[in-house]
Image 1 (cartoon, rainbow, N blue to C red):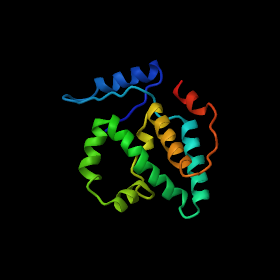
Image 2 (spheres, rainbow, N blue to C red):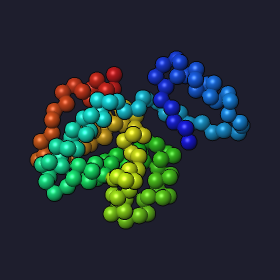
Image 3 (tube, one colour):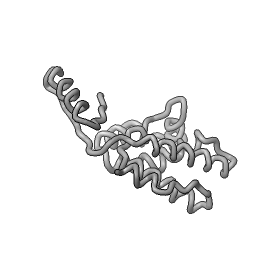
Length: 150
């Protein structure tokens, strides 16, 4: 499956050219919104490290896997029919421990890298809310998240 993020007219023209050269029949799916931003990615990494440091009994990779599974998966399942169908068929039947292992290295099941900027904002909001409610202090992103949606 090919995924392309179109950010300008050149990208659009290249996709049209690509489609014109594909044999028929073909199925195409479009999703409105850009891919997550570098700022969102950096903030996620910062928070994951802060959470792991304060919990002291989980590595950053374990925290990242937990966030992907418990916060990211529900966002993608709610908004991406293809993801939901495939996740539900393959991953959902597995025990929690196996799902968690799939989210972490070396397997690193894709979650946040499939997200649009809007979905990544919801993901970061979910991480902040979940861990703040547990007393974890996270760096205030200021207007970083609002800028990511612009």
